[in-house]
Length: 74
Image 1 (cartoon, helix red, strand yellow):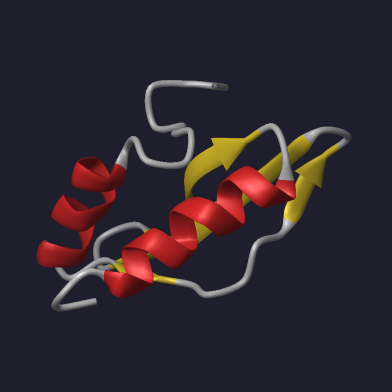
Image 2: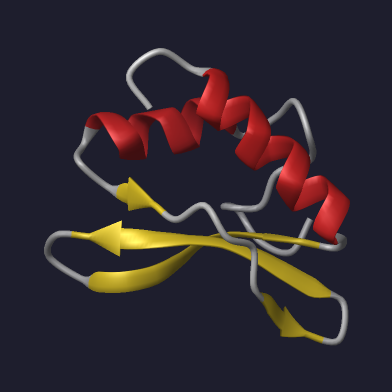
């Protein structure tokens, strides 16, 4: 994991769900932001567009984004 906001598939979902509950809009795309860094990003009302979580592979980011999308209220 890259930082405290990073998550492996199956982890970090509580953090991301809390952001959704706080009106953070999570984007559905997964940009590559470095040689081996993929990101979930979104819009925080007070901060604008920010990287929310970083992953070592696209598959990890996609797995977490798919799990978030399955959560009620997303």
